[in-house]
Amino acid sequence: MNQKTKLLYRDFDSPIGPLRLVGNGDTLHYLFILQAKQPKNYMGEWVEERSSFKSIVEQLNAYFDNQTCYLNICTFLTGTDFQKRVWKELQKIPFGETKTYAEVAVSSRRPKAVRAVGTAIGANPIPVVIPCHRVIGSNQSLTGFSGGLDNKAFLLRHEGAKIKDGRVLDKSNQAP
Image 1 (cartoon, rainbow, N blue to C red):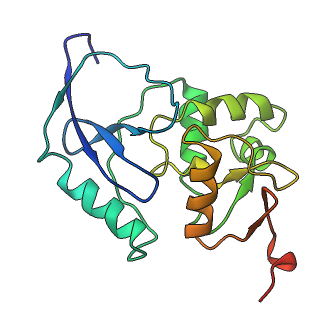
Image 2 (cartoon, rainbow, N blue to C red; image 1 turned 180 degrees about the vertical axis):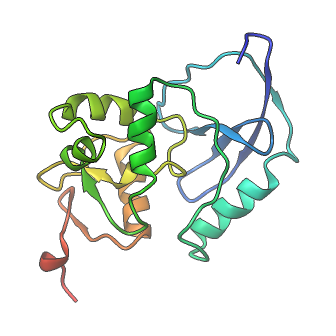
Image 3 (tube, helix red, strand yellow; image 1 turned 30 degrees about the vertical axis):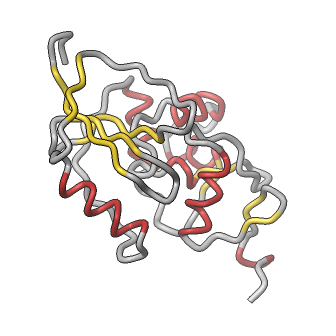
């Protein structure tokens, strides 16, 4: 993408606060949780277009309204080959399940690169759609999330996780 590329953006409300969608209207390049302190590194200019991203907004609303657990959103990702590999692995984590950073490192074919996996996850430009909220610490702790830990807890609970004292309870520890 060159410096002169103009991307469209649209803001809309969600249960985790206002979201900003950025892309070409059909393809998502970035998703920002506006109340969070996400890094906003981008190139080009953004032009507000309130009628853009109709299908994406419909899918996200269906997700938040418990009408679907599957998002089929076209994305355009810029990053290193390793980052893209990690983001692809995140998309394989099913709704309602979690993986640890170490498990993502193994599935990314870099089992000793747990910190690098954490850095790649932190650089995820499209949280929620690329479900980095489903990655937790090896001790089941929530750890970081660019959208804020409260939002990570909300998203995990939305998907059925039980959380106590900042940790996701595994199925064997959950009360019926």
